[in-house]
Image (cartoon, rainbow, N blue to C red; front, side, top):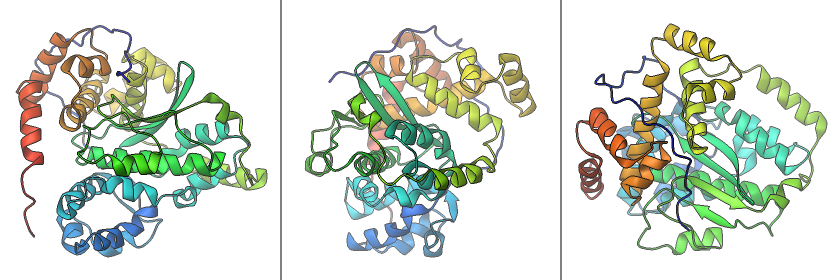
Length: 363
């Protein structure tokens, strides 16, 4: 299946200023089902303690499902664990352990929604309560629905393992909501095809599409009308009151999340982001200035991160990477990437590939 083509958009002005983002709190991840990760690493023949220490965590960090840890540290841990255990499908094994109750309050909202369409909409709205630095999205792509995940945290390490984990967990969630007969029409993963694809086929029951522009499960819209088994309206209302009392992400993170979403629609304008956030464009610009940044700087940061993920983890052509970022062609993308990284996309990809093959240093 070829990558989805986006409508062409105008290129970003290749200004000479570097990407600048204001200092803000590092996004966090609710531990949830990651409590089982140390035991999984042990089962794969590796001591988890030095790996946790390597990313600034200890075993106590993963004992309480309601604790929060660094989102960036989770990605680093997945990557070093996959390399140290020589298990390239570690992300799949992690995702297979996740079930809706592991999502805490978000899971409570989902399982008590009346229909699958409501449940998935709720998941996308409240997912930020569990995880910063990435978003869950729900799109209609022609005759199919897409449920997927997109990472927008700058400099995130381990994106292909995180995408494997989230899509594997999404498979579990859909089977919980729709029953064991549910199957995806397609599984899209933004990573190069692994040497052994059997673990992926065994889990998803179909051959995934690797080197995709995004991470998603595609399925028929008929499933959206299914009633969620055991949904309790009273428990839903109680969970909604708890969720509404939580603090929303700060404005820069809200804009970054919205940008990552509109890029999936082939858009990247400030007007599109303001509409997504239900605010006027002038209000958006004013709030970003107060936070010490501009819309263009946040756009550059998000685009740079997506570009690095696609270049490092997949074999997508530069034309397809440019299209995924909303550029009218590959030339303006190459010029802007060189401004961001100080090198060309092709050279950056070669360096990232070389780093992937380097041995993991022992602690």
